[in-house]
Length: 206
Image 1: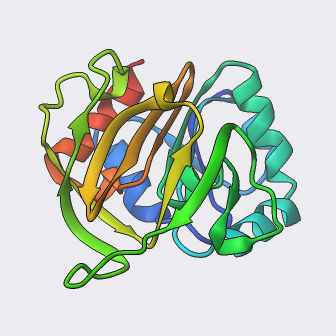
Image 2: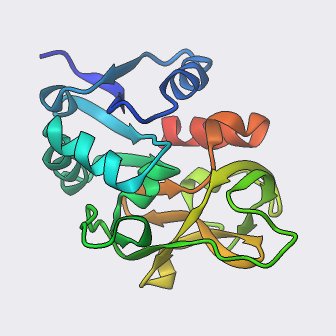
Image 3: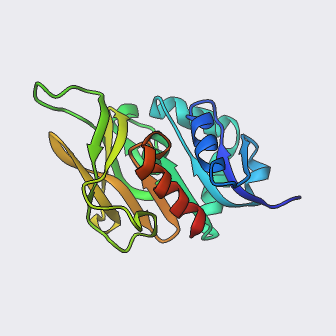
């Protein structure tokens, strides 16, 4: 079977078109797929996501994609989770009590509980406070760069060392995670104009 440079997982809940279009602006061929077998043949894998934690888990299980994702990560191949695709990597979420996530990052996903006038969901542009300048995907990204968010929940990892950037919105939350071959962002790089495209380009070049 032909090798795939970058695969984007389509499980019915992702911002697939925007992610694909952003990547292909760099002349890279991508493969949008919901077939677990095809994930074995990709060098890099992206899990986007918009929606509910429980619905996403159900769709991934229905398509036998969870094992394929974990196998890709365990093989030390590069992986990027976006928004809900980041949250699914955690042990559990307050959005779906009793359900277990992929447990790639130990910790839980918590609901934003904020005082007025801040609104939930957190929608719009906000800044990245860079904590780890060695993160390959943050190469060339200035501190306090703006990226685009749309979420009601945020990740709380057990290990603070995996946090490469945070964002302030009533609280300071982890918005960019990195551990070995695994990258995950709470914002949408495909909607974040120049900064987001630079992050995706960095992912292409690692």
